[in-house]
Image (cartoon, rainbow, N blue to C red; front, top):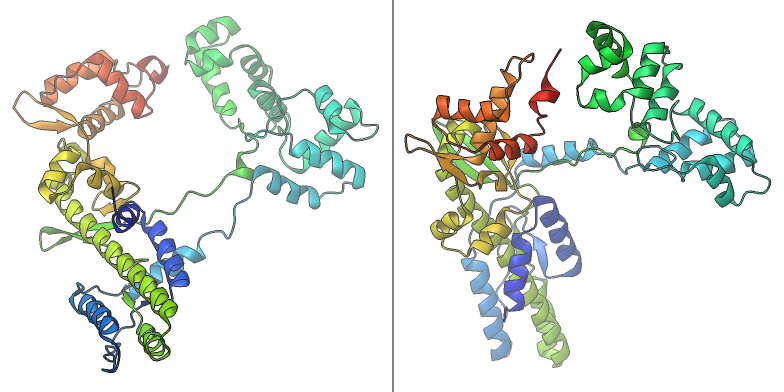
Length: 454
């Protein structure tokens, strides 16, 4: 059975930097004996000798902990400036599609009734801004006295004028058709493509479309350029949330030709036990307040355990990061193509911890490297052995596939079989076609038929 201290240590180990910052703030609020150590602060006075032996023993234990605790540096001013800048550049709240459209309605000339109808319409939309139910069904469920399909359609038209011309479309086809006239693109060929050949277009069967419509391939390609100007998701601009800011836990810097691995200090202040407990213990000793002594002891132990758990998290994460990048030196020098296969069990053996500790430590953590900010889990992957005996990671193979596709002749794109042949010819990597297909899909690369440019 795991002790409460061990459970707390595991929980803190798997927190991301932002989650840890929130947890520290919570502990600082809830525990009066936990505080952020001020730079240059003097040591608290030793407890007076008149305190009882039991209290004296406990205080000596706490002082020994404070004295022997490993030194921790304060966050630099640069880190604080970066954090402040990130906070200033982060929106105070996010809008849902409904909230954003309601703001637009507030700026429009709707009377009270039409505003109520518009509000009901807005909250009937899905996340894309489509209206999945026909107007007849919306009228039935609206519970607005005297509402007709004609009145609902009129309000929807006004709502489109105020927001997006395709808002409330039933499907992709109607969404695109609704935008043709407002965008000045209402041409017969475009309407034909949307009405009859959307599936052919998505599968890149352009020669078939040309034959079916009687137009040249160049006419079809030119029409597709106009089609790409249309918005398939009218609710996207309103309900989209900003991407989450990533705060790396690990930084790898190159100094004098060598790579140094360190942890960022952002959000991890230098914690200590507050000397305020001494006065409370003194009063409890003088008044015989056993309940007070018990309460103080519990809070002190909680503060001590928390400080130790945070320190253990930092120490474990740094040791694991050092082991990872010691193995992935090739990545630091040359990038993804030089990555080698790495299993968590290998790192666990090097660091001297259980594999589950490695898994918890890297979960949700990011590393800032010379080749960008990447999840720590990215550096763990299987791989294969080339004909020269060199080990190649899955990430390296994916990168090589990506580069081969980027350099291919777009009029004769590389099939998965051809990609497998090239990997063997150029890099000595033998890999099955089905594995190539799996990696290609993971990279969001379309099939050779869909990549062909006519």
